[in-house]
Length: 377
Image 1 (cartoon, rainbow, N blue to C red):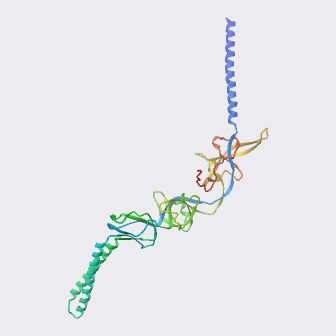
Image 2: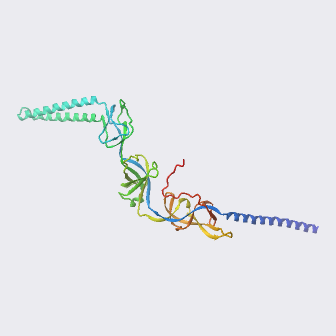
Image 3: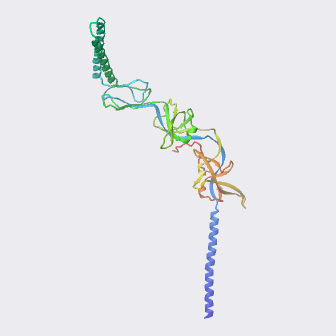
């Protein structure tokens, strides 16, 4: 029995030793595999950091509005008798545009003017009689009052007749006609829009912190997506003397020459104001920066010599950077990168500090300071 017990214990020990030995061997192999897997070279795209001139700018999105613009309408109701313009005309100030039927009003005006003429004649006759003491002062005063009243009634009717005519209040460009001859119009019905398009304003807002960098007469550049690649140059003409208490923003107005009427009221535009003198900053594509709660980081590519086969060994090193303003696809880097550093701009999501890398720059992200949307069709 003792021999059998000893033999059984030996067999159990051999089996357990085999199991534990196999688990240890498996763990070692897995560790070696994962270690080898983690050190596999990762393909990335890179760029060489270099200084570029950097013009500080203030940017804002604003709306275009005409220097003078109005939807023309009538103060009184009536039937359209004449239309004296065409849609899209350029008109001068005071140009007649539309007339309502006004025969009754004109006839009443003529009657009142006749009464005023009679009152004037009566006053002149009584003034002569007063000189020879033929009438009293009271009669002369009554004649004077009657003349003033009749003239006032005639002026009132003349103003009513004038409201039957619509004239251009300022020079500008007419829009599309909204009424027809013979149509009955109520007071306030829009007839046509009139817009003075040259020059034209761009209104936008900036944070109150920008106030110290603004002054009337500064150059302002406007970009409109209707005309890709075209810049419109104007100047800052007004700064609102009051800051909006709810947004803490400052209202700004710039004026632009618009002789060809490319810019229209209601469009939106991106306004850019150059501030200060150009500086030199190391710039990188924005794709190179990884933003997180601990700070902004990039991956630098360092040359670690050559391997046994004579191939260069490149390794990624993560480092913190301080970034400044952005400009198109670019970002200014204030600290953490120097000119000549090789920086990863694509593929960094699969990197960790110390990862070996392979550089392939056949396809790289855009690095344009003023990118333009392109139609690939």
